[in-house]
Image (cartoon, rainbow, N blue to C red):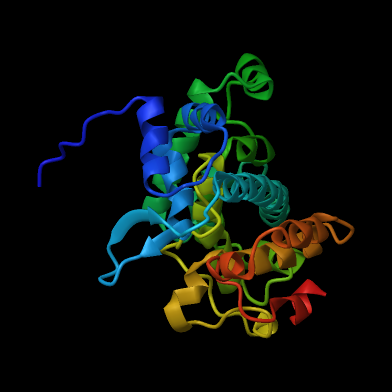
Length: 304
């Protein structure tokens, strides 16, 4: 098929929504939001309020009595949810940086342990990861990087506790997975209250796409993720099980449960969980279901 939809002005986009049955008394307000958010971005939040056709194709007509504020409230909820999730992932990522760099350095008694391929399982992965660090080192304007370049000539790269600050969660999860220092990995796994090293590796890897969605300000609330978290028997009473109806385990709920576990491990006094519960109470049961939340989730152990 050839894409032949013509571009529309903000006024025309607003009229299109009104023609499809959206209620909005203040048209200028609608146009302002379309202009600042973008029609295409906003349309993703219209979907839950559209009528379902018999053949499950999108007909764009709104459910009767749908008000623009309902769509805007969902958009604002998603933005607040992203900020809250990003806060948790930032804490988890920073803790993983600190724990991994410290544990590996102490376990190997080597400030530059990450340069030694003997400490890692896959040499090819180690070379690729090291190349990314080298590139980040060359392009960085960070004060601590500039200080190292100015004062030291060997080793060429800074110690592990410095370079770890240039790593993303995705890169850090790959370094952690490739590490063969079992004592160091067991220390980190225990610190995050994960049952096994294998589970910890999978959890950090699975959180990376969630982090990226938040970092790029993309829709989070009802997103279906390709990766699912591993089965964790220790928390099975609070998690949606694998192979659940409608692939619930691929939606946000399970990720939030694991973030609660990780946050409780690294910062037991955090108010993050209570703030998350408060935010979730602002949306409908149907909207919670669209995020993978099971019936009666409030009563599950993790949320008490």
